[in-house]
Length: 179
Length: 264
Image (cartoon, rainbow over all chains, first blue to last red; front, top):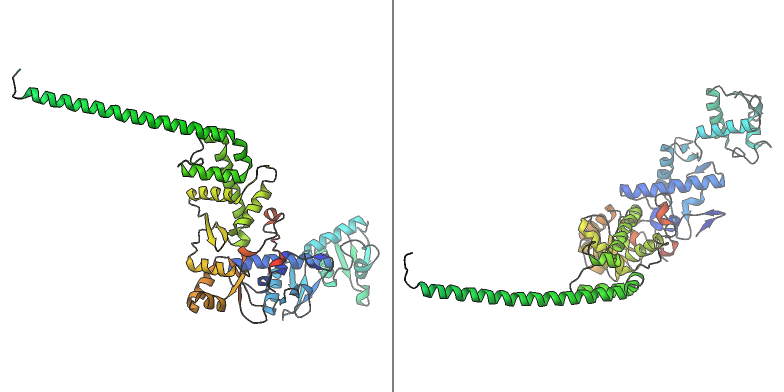
């Protein structure tokens, strides 16, 4: 079994036709399914939040079998994730993609849980503290992508469970929870 | 009563006819009895044999195959009915019906990634895994026998021979000679190219592409355009040594293919 760091690659990754977009619908569906699962799984375990289409993303090529995904295939797989709400394009040109192994609303739930666990129901935190502070260490929130965090907090804000306030710089942006 | 001419003659003739008939019946009866006796002897001998070797038949796949062969030679099909002494004696019908059901299950479970064509060897391995708790061994011969019984259901189960390999088809697609020829050609490396087919089988490109397209459509093959020679490869899923461990129970979520089959 091939490995990428400590990540165990699935067997299909070693099979050349999976690196070519399949023309037959049913076969392509199966191919898409496998790739979607692989991308989400890999990003989740490696804590990868964005994939650049033209970057050297490790899953996009397999040197052992000398195959790599062309741009069309990359965009197809990521678009499939986007259509399921498991990813979002960050630009109109579809060059950069935000990977949501948790959907935004799930991230919001995770924040709520974190707030409850740490007794911050009426507390105030800076956004940077949530991402990189001591409190979030060891939780899924640690190191979370800023865009994702902002979007999740906006969901909470719209539900009246948080209020985001701007500071003098982006570092000072804070949030007051009222759970 | 009015006298008719030659009544005596007629009566004699009738009597003779009766005699002949009686005699004929007797002969036939004797023959039938003899036949019945022979059959009874044969049956009891066969029963005796089966009883004596009951355990061998159940436990030893080779012996079982030979027993089937013997039965076939004398025109007895122990699987023809689940009633009667075979079933009572050996439970052999149940054994094959159970195998049949398990084969159907395996074929359905693996269909999504092999397109409904599975290697007999692989099928047997999966079958053995499925029956792990069962001490009785299952041979390829048993598989073939169980599959031949499935045909009656008209569900399109069929064994096709491709070169030395036997493949079990569980989708109703009829594979014609052309498809079989391609499958046979692909055996060596797991894939073919259009060039290769045209060269080896001396076909025109229309015929080649037509056959390959059908195989793609049926989900039996996948294309690979990534080789540096730029030639499209048609890979056949049935030739992938699939990652068998636990395959059955996580079919859709993480279909695995062994990495041992990629070209060098």
